[in-house]
Image (cartoon, rainbow, N blue to C red; front, top):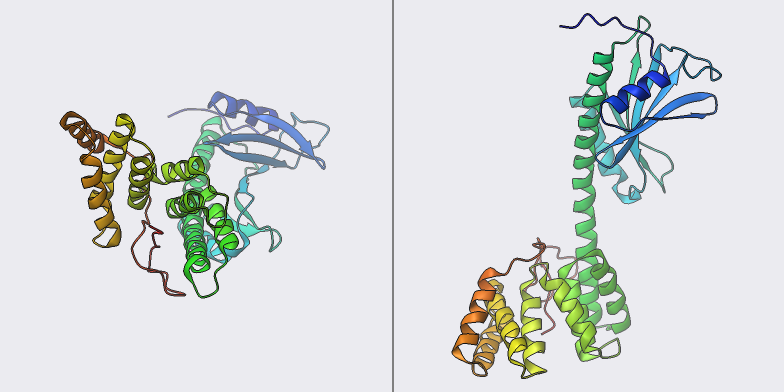
Length: 322
């Protein structure tokens, strides 16, 4: 136990205590209210002080609020995030999580009010900071899970719209390219693969084999089995270089291991036979070993299937253009 005597809080003292804990502690003043700005795990938080003169930053005060927030919350996620905040508040009654701001630009806020007319010990302030940083990380993770789920749904719907623009009754290749490109930039492997297909065939864009390989490779790095087949096909068809054929056979084996039974699986097996016929035994064995050692940078949660989605059918993953 410590015999520390409570003393009145002040911006200068709290800033120093934060620095002693390893956080930053920068004092600033807005509209006559002093605050200390800090941060943890990449998230900023602030302490706002009340009950003291703005002309005396070292003067003690009896109340302060510690708060954080995140802008850029998608408006369509606001309702879901309100539910997350309500659940969070029921568990952690001393902090308050809320969605504030305009409907078009909601702001996720977490705050904790403190009133200490008799003073605050250094140990108690350190405890408050540690708890708040923990709560901040928990709330951010829970809200991130909700927004990621929403983002995944939006990406999947956009991918299906691109498929219909490519294969549906009212075809619009330019719109398909636009939708695939949006998803490719967002990191969805299925759309990266299909955008690569369009560059390979010259549908909706000028034919560009380098761009095709680029997008196939991005999708393969995310463990998309159809992209493995795309790479195996384009690499083996465009060259007789032994090293490139070894890479092609590696991807053909990865495709055969990851694809479901169907048209693409049959193409993968055919690619293995065709490429194997061009290589010596030691190169074939090396391709097997490279496939065994392959580790993607990221494993996509949704991979591509063999059938076109029905409109409104979110259960269908996607479709290959091969």
